[in-house]
Image 1: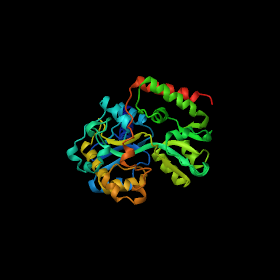
Image 2: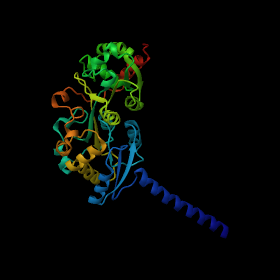
Image 3: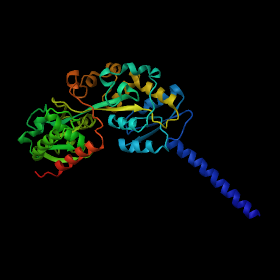
Image 4: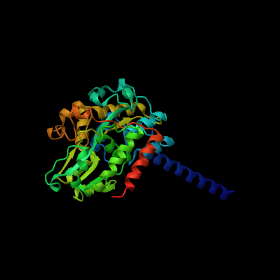
Length: 357
């Protein structure tokens, strides 16, 4: 009997220990509620000092987790076991999350600082009326080029890439929407075009670009361009800023024909446990002083008009990363094309990658 009692006590102790460990893990993994706020964001995408400032101002403890792709973020949220109060997906993923009922509508009355966002970046097709999201950072797709490797030549348009003198000098980012979009834009078509004739024309033009393409790569494009392994590269503006900080010979241009305008927006996932705290955090990040501090730390473009006035002129006046209204009008946000049309883009992009020089 005593032996049975000892076994029972041992089992009880182990169970309690496991429960304690599970509670600790749940807090770390985002299962926490109460006076905590769990944020799910891209890596190195916020000034840590702002998290501490928010905690001090509100008394809310922030649990911060990161993801490395929109798909990984959505998978974790859609599974439902992990609770996140604020997430920062990109525009096309917001549209998808809306359709799958994974987002909570925002109470704009609790976001008074929303008034500081540039109207150009509000009420966009992926979230009409900003019912579910507010802009966090934005950027473009463009061309990084090294004038010293091009004999002083400047790049201004997509069509410049088809110059025969650029044989084997171009790096392309490994993305179907980006590369097919480049082909479509160079023909003055929308980068959301689904007309099969237009897609075929873009693919044919891209095939003619292949002799100039050195490689189609992923994240390593930043290192290769910084190390002058190629003269030009098609990249996202955030990557461009990072590359240019490592090599002052590099420049970045948004092509004159137009390009992609991308957004990472703050949302509240359906599984949020602290909606009130989430709204407080979003409004906190919309405060011009905080938005300016964050933009200077992260290096991406802020959509906050008032924050722009607080940034150094060397940043806010840089038209490469803050293009004027005339060029911004030529930029397009990616739309969710649907599985069938997106598959067609991927198919044509794969055919292009397999095209022999």
